Image 1: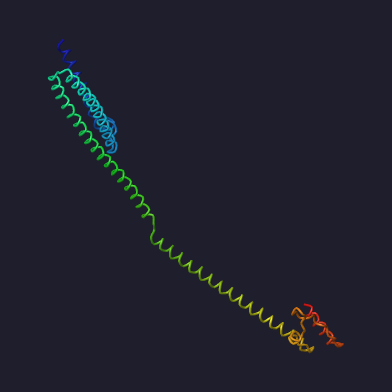
Image 2: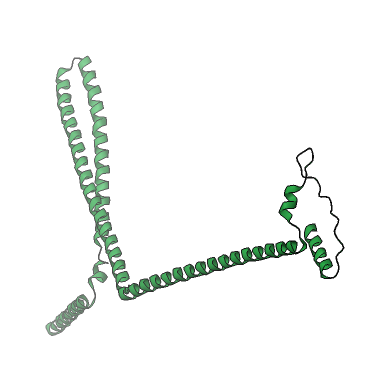
Length: 254
């Protein structure tokens, strides 16, 4: 019988040892996050502390409100006892009133301290957010500077300046060429006009008529206007003289 009991005890010890080995193996193999949950970030911990501070401030406000209500009740009871000429009760309630007011002031001080701690934690959170933002900006700037090829950028700027100067030069040359063409055209027009005037004068000289003298010697009417030119009797011309006369008449009509 006792041998059977020893066998059971040995089996139990074996199972306990096996269980301990399994637990130890799991402890080494499994990460801590699996056993205790995911590890919280500093920002999450900060938010938890802020929520705890806000809850503590609300609890203090509730207790202070209760004490203020108790203060009003004590004042009313003291007045009532004084009217009833119960001086001992008035003194006891007055001590209680002083104690209540002292605790109200303490609650105000504790609330102020908790708010100061909350503001400090909020400042830390803002600084952490700013640090994270600066970290992201710095990373982006590092990537941009890494991708920016300074020699290539310098070459691009030099090529742009070169092409811009070339375009300005070509534009200036085109403007000069246009000005030269316009000048030559004006000279040709002036030469053509001078030549046409010379031809007309030559024709008039050949037929013996001076246009300027005829205009000066022409009589004027009462209104100061030149009188209509009286057609002069033209001699009968033949051959080449007749053709010249016809050309002269055409010029006069024009």
